[in-house]
Length: 143
Image (cartoon, rainbow, N blue to C red):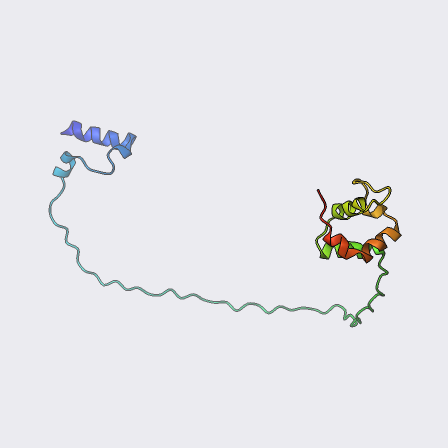
């Protein structure tokens, strides 16, 4: 019996997961089978008292009073160029640069290629695009 106890203690010491927390039959035989008597005792549970401290007041010092400033006058509306107007129209109608360039190529505009930028176009061409904007929107490029 002593050797079985030694083996059980050795297994618990080296690899406790092997026994899964279960006692061997020899160990259970030596347990006291007398029922435990637990006397009822009165237990008083008191709620803890939490002391709250009042926060210290914040003392601030005014260093210098600044005069109330008036709102600045609105600047005059910046003069918009025809290119700005065209860009705004393109943004509103969700039309990209390639669409406009393809429109110009389809209408046989000289010196305009697919590599041409809108900023490179003469101001008169941009004004003409603005005046014919409905035709530009209706154009279906073959991209």
